[in-house]
Length: 160
Image 1: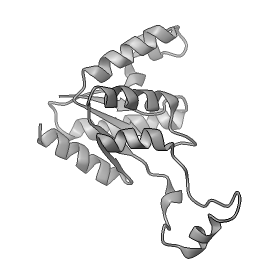
Image 2: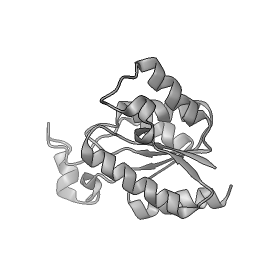
Image 3: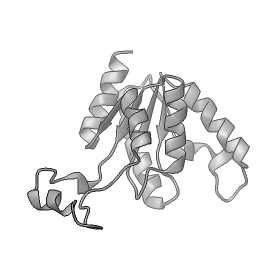
């Protein structure tokens, strides 16, 4: 089974977190192949050169070869490349399992945080683009912890 890993990949912290999650996914089942774009030096060695068409074709091909797309939604906004990969997966009916760990989602029952929503610029929660979130939810799920996320990936693997 092929799994495509979609995650932000331009800061060292992102690269390390992606490596961590992919290591965990690979450990779930040795028959699974996980494509991590940052490991594809042909298009993602930032000291080298790959044009936009090379990157789009290489990554899209790997999305289309996948049985599952896993995505990290964390960040100031959903990474544009991740959003594009989710769109390709949705269009082709490839299930998506996403991870969204932003701690600002905690306290959804806190009355002060809820009341603050009525004040301009006092939103205590993080916003995600609802179009991209909708594409994920129409063909998959979003999980708030690594444990939930990895359990869902394992369940998908075991069911296929």
